Image (cartoon, rainbow, N blue to C red; front, side, top):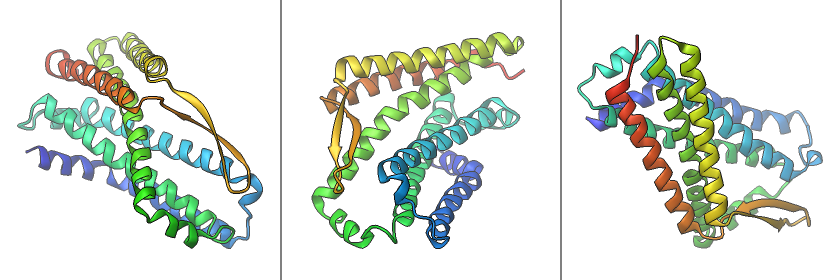
Length: 247
């Protein structure tokens, strides 16, 4: 039943995500054709903007879908299905990861398309298709996912908590937003404190320095992420089972 639920969730939002992905790829195709040089803005700036704006748009769409699908007009339909609240939430988490990684891939595709006429993209791609590069890419994806998921789960918790006081929406929204902010802040603080996140300067081929953040211990980072995801998931599922109010 969970597989059917995941398919249902994917169908609910696929038009929005695929439209945004297609728009980004079309921009990547069109901008170099219009003879706009993207290098003058600087590769680090382009990469930073792309890999910040695209994920933020993706998370916004995910949050909108979660709110509408479970706590909006579609909520009565979803909670009438022969599935538990935990299964509903698991489906949302899995589809969140699917869409988020699709948009990360789209962001990477956008960068490749933007730089195709000014950077030896084929040569770069050949270097990427090595076991070491693939392993590093997967490690980066893992790091991104394990640090984004607790933030998304905190937002899910805040949305769920807001429904407890739905008859006084202002109070509900306040406590929901406060819980989200507190959860995200606590997770980030814990990650910085225990996983040893720090800045690292990486020199590119053109001697440009790019500042990135890395965790001194990825295993501790993963453990912290698992703890917070479990906490946020359990609280959200409890609210959905025991305290949900769609009135």
